[in-house]
Length: 175
Image (cartoon, rainbow, N blue to C red):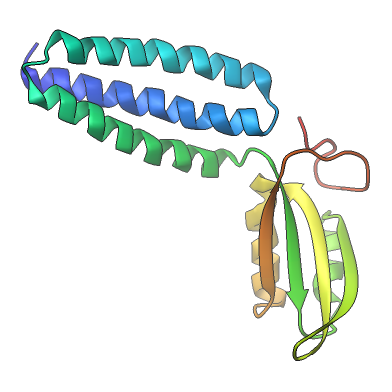
C-alpha cells in the first residue's frame, strides 16, 4: 500500500472512531446505555486498527498527519451527526415583550406543551413561555417563533432527565 493510501486509511478510520466517541458521550449524557455501549465497542475497535497502522509505519509522517487530521474531522462529523439526529430533550424559555397570546395558542395547537407566566422586565410587562421538548423539534418551534414573534428572546437548556407533567409532543422524553 502506498504511503498516501495508508495515511488516507488512517484519516478515515479516525473520522469513524472519533464520530462514534462523540455520539457515545451524547448517548451517555442522555442515559441511553445500550447505544453508548455499542458505540464504545465500535470506537475502540476502529481506534486499535488506526493506531496499529500508525505504529507499523512510524517512519511515515503522513500517517501521523492523517491521524491528527482524522481526529479533527471526526470531531466535526460527530457534532454534525448529533445536530442532525437531535438526541435528547431541551427546556426552552421564550420571553415576549408584547402581551399577545398568539404564539402560546399557536404552539399549543401544534402539540407543544406550553406553560405561560406573566412578569415584569426592565422595559415593562413580559410573558414567559416555557416548553420541554425533544431536541429534534427545535426547528419546528423556531419557525413558529420567527413567524409570530420575531423579536422574542429565547434560551435553550439541555435536560438530563424528566418525569411526569404534561407534554403533548413525545410521550417519554427519556427514551
